[in-house]
Length: 247
Ligand code: PGA
Image (cartoon, rainbow, N blue to C red; front, side, top):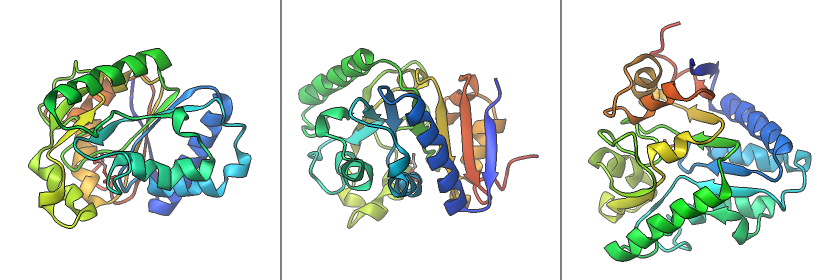
């Protein structure tokens, strides 16, 4: 099945179209599970969803799951992905804390992290497949925190972040030294279970990874390339991110 690619003039146009897409699917699945991603790319989409929240149905039955969380940051740490989602989307939508699920990265002790991994995978199984999983793409082609050379047959697990991811994410911290070196992420197999995937890509820094993902070989060196094997993937990209794609 081919990945469906739509190219938008710029980030704002992409974000508006993505919000439309997500709002339609929430309307069709108000009791379902929505898979979310953090990072700069979906921020515009979340802002637009909040701007249009009057169009949304009653969300008291919606559940959300997130792809990943840093290991060693408590949920109320300003750089944690819990915190990001609360501020960028959940508070504005009025979602209760018990509607949203993340890997628990608060305790970096290996045994506690292992327990958090198992607990999250069980929770995902119990909730069932998301009707939609939103994804970004790393400059190195990662999805979630599945870094290059990850196995494709992974479920939720602890990862060592690659140097390129640490550098890319250091913009959110005072320095690269403060970026946690590990995270808990849904595995490739876990996130491939979503019924539908919407990947968002913006900016020329993503152009090479996006080209590889769509037009290259399916290979662990470019984790996002596995999406070629999923039967229902939309990519929304701005012109800069799409600049290396063939017609
Ligand atoms: P970004 O991150 O949206 O901040 O570029 C995307 C990702 O690393 O998956």
